[in-house]
Amino acid sequence: MARTAGSHSDITGPRVRAAALSLFARHGFAAVSMRQIAKEVGVQAGALYNYTPDKQSLLFDLMRNHMEELMQERAGLTLPEGALARLEEFTRFHIRYHSQRPDEVFIAYMELRNLTDENFAVIEGLRRSYEGQLEAILDAGQREGVFAVPDTKLATYAVIAMLTGVNTWFREGGRLSLDEVEQVYWDMVRKAVGA
Image (cartoon, rainbow, N blue to C red; front, side, top):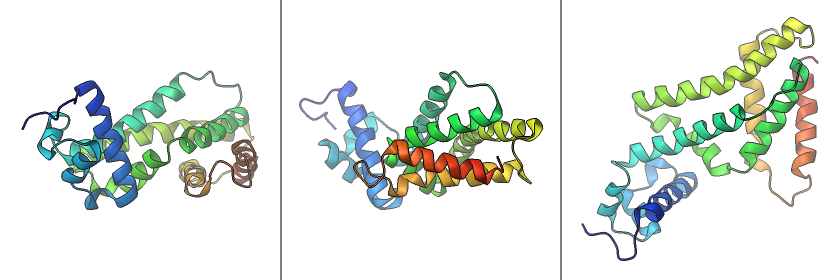
């Protein structure tokens, strides 16, 4: 099929990903067709295959990009000394970073079931790497005697779930600012790990 007049790969490719992200977040991966994505972008359905082999690849790319960008952002940080300070930094970073990306977060958690086994393994590996940073902080805090958790892996999952939950309800202009939400959550996380 011919490319739609005025369509350019450096413009259309990102528009395809943005449309897929929005549609997957609103309706769910299974309910969205390639035809719907094409309509949203303003191209013929067949033209989408110039940008992605299939819908599964599109979902995988969105999830992988989200996790890789998250890890890149973390890698660029200068981390404070001491487990307590690093836990506070992680808490605030997680809330701040994810609050700007609600669709990506929703898809990253809710659409895992729609990945092929091979793609799931890649995303799961990236998630484990991110979670491993928090678990290392909790392990260090146990060694330093500043945290008291019976199982650091379980505590890691609990803290991540609590922090990620902010995305389900937080809205700019609401009762609390993002800074206030970060402070409240930091207090809850600190208490949750016995600090």
